[in-house]
Image 1 (cartoon, rainbow, N blue to C red):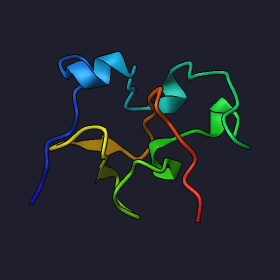
Image 2 (cartoon, helix red, strand yellow):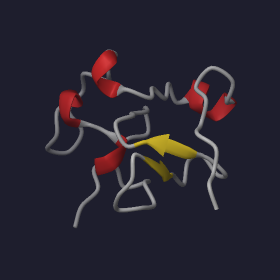
Image 3 (cartoon, one colour):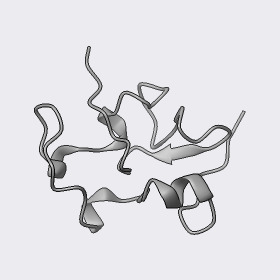
Length: 81
């Protein structure tokens, strides 16, 4: 099943968490969380992502939607092995 992409302009959860589709094109949280600085925080290395591959993946924070693997939001948490 193909889920729609989350739209930061219209999705209230995405707005409240300051989700951005391309983290490299925007200023992210400058605070270092765990061992990764803000410049290395992406959806693809976040613990909330629900798939190991794909440009767009389901995320537990955005039920019924997918997020960009290169995205970011305020709830980012480092995915550990």
